[in-house]
Length: 327
Image (cartoon, rainbow, N blue to C red; front, side, top):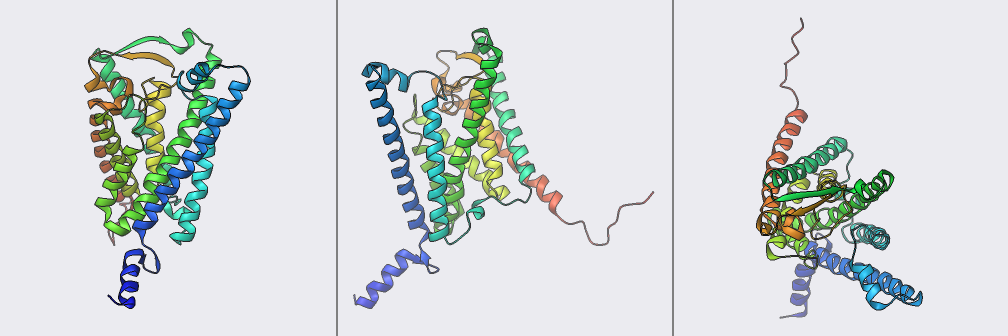
């Protein structure tokens, strides 16, 4: 092959529309995302461990502090905020310099954003409330006590507010990465269906190290990625999947006190799934690890489709020549 032919082949592989090929942009973005988030976690956790050891804490106590106790802890907040800030910067750099598009074009248009956000909030609440009351009513879940039986109301409200902030940031972070950046680039390179499948599988893989994870849980997390992607594509914005993602996690953990993808959260209730019913409840992983989460996500798709139909009907112009009947 001539030098000219090699150059042409390399250009076809790496360049599309005078920009780096979207599949390479998506791949480099995932690699950069992994590197920066792991670097932040390693730096913060190392500094925390050395500080606690210097303060006289034993290695076993440090490990217990890191692994024990419900979320969110102060350390988790520090990590969350640092990672979110760096991810925003990383996404802006990729979007501006490699994609040559605005950050807002990821899905932050102002059109109908309030309606989409409100619907997402309600959808997450309704689905999680449905899971909770269905499991409770079927005897698959027991309520031991409420949080204010052990703590003051002020403490309970404070923890609820911290969880609110925690899940807003976490949901926004994940939607920007897995839906906002990956789907447009993957769609440009391999089409919309493959883009949804690949981004959702990546989303599932990134939860593989969560506590109490299982194959069913990973498949359900990937399915959740498909549902969030469906919300993103139907609305054309990130507002709907961000609000839905936040609401699902917040009400799941902070209100109904179910594990959130294997992570225990300070909720207003103290609940326990019935032993032996993990296939349905997800056990220590939470609804995403069982059939209850699968069923809720299937129902979510129906609600999302109905919402898109209602919005399309409201946005469509009235037939020409039709006027309201005057009485």
